[in-house]
Every structure is written in C-alpha cells, then in structure tokens.
Image (cartoon, rainbow, N blue to C red; front, side, top):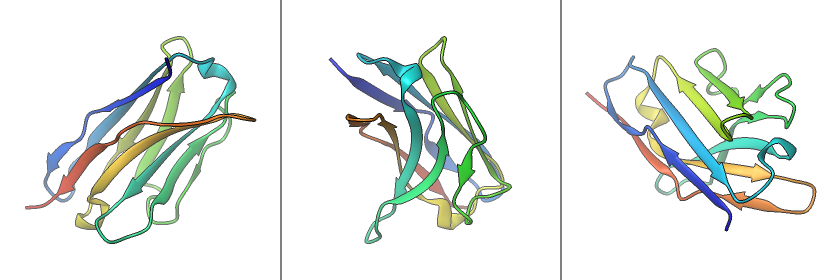
Length: 116
C-alpha cells in the first residue's frame, strides 16, 4: 500500500523556521521525483519545490527561493523541506507528491501557520 506521510508542520512566528518531512512507503522511492506543494484557503495548489529521483539540482518557486531547501534521503525513503525566514504568506497546507513515469502519489498534507 502506497503511503506518503507528512510531518513537522505547526504554528511559527514570522522569521521562524520549520522542517517538514515526508516518509514514503509502498513504492520504489528512489525512482520517483519528489515535490512539495502547498495550498492556502481560496488559492490554487502551488508547486513549491522539486527534487529529481537522483537528488540533482532542485528547483523552487520564486516565492520561496533562498528561504526553502528540499532534500531527500533515499536510504530512509524520506524527503524534507527546510523552511527558513517564514512569512505569513507561507501559511498553507503543505503536501508531498511523488511523481513517476506512470504513477503519481499524494500525501494528505501538514498545516503550516505563520503568525505572530
């Protein structure tokens, strides 16, 4: 059974940091590109960061460049999103996505709230 389980969300003050994790199981993790998306209320889902199956150069949305870092540990079947200098506009549900040649899997998300 395929599972993507996100963790690490929470409430943080502006300027703070959080590290999200996404633990994968039930598929060949190392063969999938991994993505972090986010969705805020009333807004479209936004691709935040991508890392290839081999862990090559990641790509980021312009809104998070220089603040967020995506990484993966293929030995632990886990992808991470380090988020620094958080802003109120980063408030959203953050979702993990695994994208293969044929299959596409989603986690249920973890809430990140940036507020003073």
